[in-house]
Image (cartoon, rainbow, N blue to C red; front, top):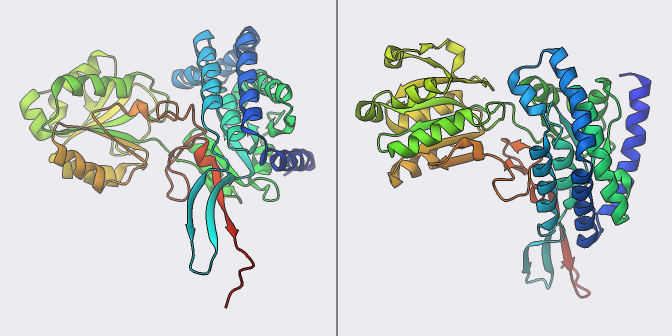
Length: 419
């Protein structure tokens, strides 16, 4: 790691620590005001953001990014409006800091409260999606945390323009500008510097592909909230409603193929297939999806043989793996073997079958008769998310403002002494 990156990390880390100390007791009104002003700045500055994004789109094309990655990178007026709306939604949420999570009295005379408190300084490393600059900045601020952002090189100009709007919001509310910092260089050495910044950063959140997340998980010396891959399954049970199943399967795969909540594997109960035939596969083929199948499904015209590693693979493209299974237990067994603990959906009208699916699987998000594309903090009413966590410590599923808090114990006595 070069001296320049260490020096920059030290400077940003120190100012982030100072900002976090001030944010820990910032009023809910000041944080709300900052986010509302940032939303106004994003919308009024939308042309500057679009112009910056055009530079990034050109850079991405030159790098040969896939269509899915280019879609993640793109910012148009509709997406900028959604970004501003997301900032306002987070602003309007109840402040998570200071919530009393539990309280009780002890025979000793002590009164004990467990109270939500900020984590401190959050580091976010992300690829392609420049809107993360706003989402992560907003959620960290709402939870009283300072944040250091390291956007992908392909979204450098867009992230810089969005970050300027976030700083404008902080300035408007009189909060420290170092509360939301963006690393001002494409130098990859800064990623290593962040991962080793144990004196400054309390948790790292990576958002990107398997390569980035794997690197962070291997090399980080601070705790990590992350998921390695979004290998999401949809299981069509024998008692699924056909119309619901057709709509959900198409949406789960094709709405946006480049997001971690896109379905990557379709499991069909043999009873469903006997009753309804190839309709789900034919719908996908008609929509332009490449269906990589095995067994009896290969008899469907247009399917192609699945390679051994296509099950348990995150395509992030108009490709899906598909196979027949023997009932819900067959689906559960497949998902346990190939899943990534992200999101799974069962399509069924049978309550007992749905309960079995949801009880016996331990993915972060389990759905019934709903598209996996809903695996998103905004769709969960969180105003947005800083990422999806599939680990089992502290945060799971969409990581919103509440999940960016820890807690502390406040204990009150009255001259109370331990015997």
